[in-house]
Length: 213
Image (cartoon, rainbow, N blue to C red; front, side, top):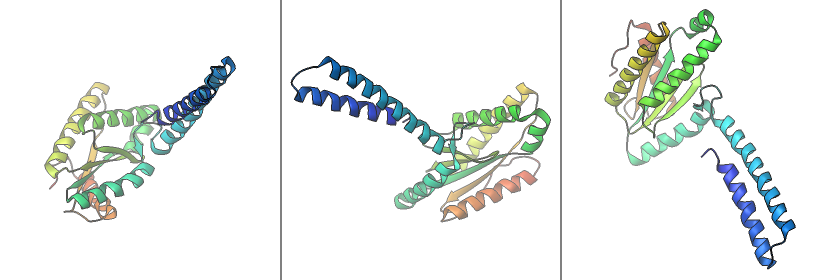
């Protein structure tokens, strides 16, 4: 929750102030003023906490989760999958020749492409799936209880939406993707990421994306 720190401190100060006034059996105007000041201060301190928390786990450009959050959450998601004997899928996405995009059109355009890609991905995955900016122009989507067919459908739709976006902007940008599934492709995070990366680079070397098996 984006306002967790603010609401928590604000309510704590309000409850404390009301309790003090009730125990004193009178409402002193000065006490009410101080309560308002404390509440405002608590809201501001909570805002600083929320801002720090946001910057800790969110990528400032795309507003999606960053690698630090991924390092924290992916092991937990794998543990949950192991305990519940369910699948866990990792989808790696990478923009081909992104450096050329920046060099040709400028970094502002490159930033816009990254943000649009995130917008498209979020529009095609489930709420329980996690989108992570893993580094530069590489993204991960971690999908609990998902199979290969499900991910291939997501990839198909993401590519279609990106083609539409590129047509409107009169540019040609291609994505390379890789899939890894627990438990078929690996038992650890390292194994799954390695398989997903390998599949992504295999596709990057091919002429066009194909459904992965």
